Amino acid sequence: MWNGLFVVALAICLGLLLRWCFRALPNENWQILGCIPTSKQGPNLWKGLNITYYGLIVSAAVVAATATVFVLMGSIRIPIGTTALMLILILPVWALATKVVARLVEKKPHTFTIGGGTFVLLFITPASLWLTNVCLGSESGMQVPLLPFFAATAIAYTIGEGIGRLACISFGCCYGKPISQCGPLVRKMFGGHGFVFTGKTKKIAYESELDEHEVVPIQAITSSIHTVAGLAALVLYFNSAFYAALLVCVVTTQGWRAVSETLRADYRGEGKISAYQIMAGITILFVVVPSLLVDVQSVMQPDLMTGLTMLWNPPMMLALQGLGLGTFLFSGRSKVTESTVSFKVLVDRI
Image (cartoon, rainbow, N blue to C red):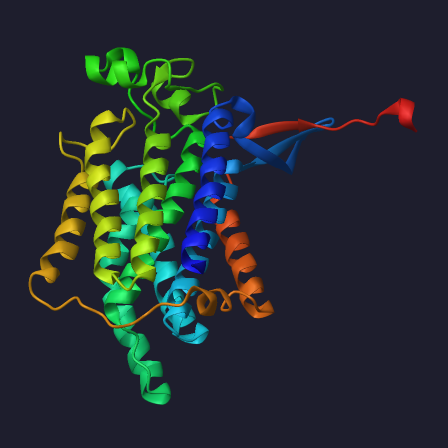
């Protein structure tokens, strides 16, 4: 019963969050969160470093995804230390890969790709799991099972991407094609329901001059699909259907990744088939093919309340806060915008 109530409550919270973000974030005032003066440019004028809502949303998504891994692994009674070691091994690689893959594909130094970073994780996760079992398994006598861990990380990624894609709405990146340039079916489906971005500092404006144009709300569609897939996979996971949960996450997210590229107008690299579409296809094969070769049944029964207790301790809360702060500092400092700040005294209030 608790499992079902948890998923329902989570669905309501995420649904309300997405609904509000779809309405507010395309607006100009939801891009820059704050400004830090860095150097003086003249009398009462300072050059400023812009801090973005993009970074705030991404940090929230990373914290949510990480907490999800701890809860799901805790629900099958994997100790906090074991899960933490695996994440310590893979998260720094993921953060680096988000920049490196984007630079290789898009030839731009100041951009990120969550999908590209996740593609790299697909291949380093088995190695990190093996290393964790070697380091801790001999002492504790516990071996972390591959399939539940893969399923847990897939669910975490899916839910995290559902939240994180909201950052793209705020920054105006990963944007869709103008609805007026799409086919009749797309115009009928999204006409009057698309995004209209405002603000010349949003990527859609300075890269393609599509601000003030109604475009396919591709970020909203992606966020919604990921959220629904993540919630469905949670239900499967709590019913011990680990492979089914993994399959739902990977096939849905990566299949949509390949399809959504056809509705996007931002630069995705050279060629009719982008590198990201190829990565999505490889990821699906990587998950589907093993099911034809090995037994994917499991007798483990996850317990939600046991998993939630993993979060209810000061060290874990502080660690998640530190992770959020680090992610915010990593992704929240705008490299493509700057500001000029002026200060003055309100004489009438002295």
